[in-house]
Image 1 (tube, helix red, strand yellow):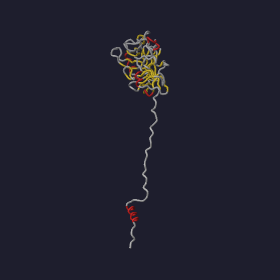
Image 2: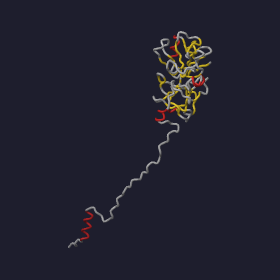
Image 3: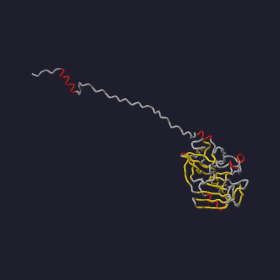
Image 4: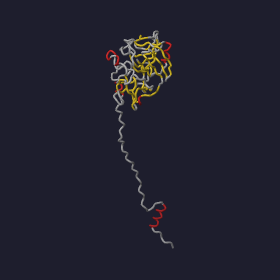
Length: 283
């Protein structure tokens, strides 16, 4: 005869069959997300020499119509620039400074007269370039002949692109001769009419600022305009008075208002140079 099954035994079997266990249930794991501290880093401070949009809008433009006595005087106007050129990156131009990391005094325009212009570099300091300008430091009637030309300024490398040219134009006023060179090769050389004593051609270093036609000037197909200005004329033909190479029937002697008059047959060679080509005018 079988022994009777105890209640405890039956309960134990039911617990086993149902998958239950008398053991303590595991404590569920709780994942606590890490606390992310907000960044305490500050945005980089602007460079002390940088110019805001509002400040730029208030700056004068360094073009032939401008008069900027605050422009930096060229320290060596008797030396031909190396051929390194800069061009503003932005269509609106780039700030000009009175020294590396200095004070902005004007905007360097991309376009001078009728085309995008490049500017010769005359000195470099780290990421800064000192360049020749097409603006006057003063009007002849106010500052005299020596206070007009030789204007320069500084630009930052981030604001410009660089290029080089091996073209050069030299002008000898005593020999009344203008020469176009590419490297050491003479591409063109011709006699030239120069400024009269009352309206002399300036002695300075400058550059080809613009090459353009003037339909009203039937004597010359185009004008090769420099960044240098007449040292005695405040204006010419109701505008500024930049010096230019142009054709003219008479092209010998001291006969002009400061421009360089050359034979029409020689004009094409000078009109083919890149803008920014350095020019040296010597006595």
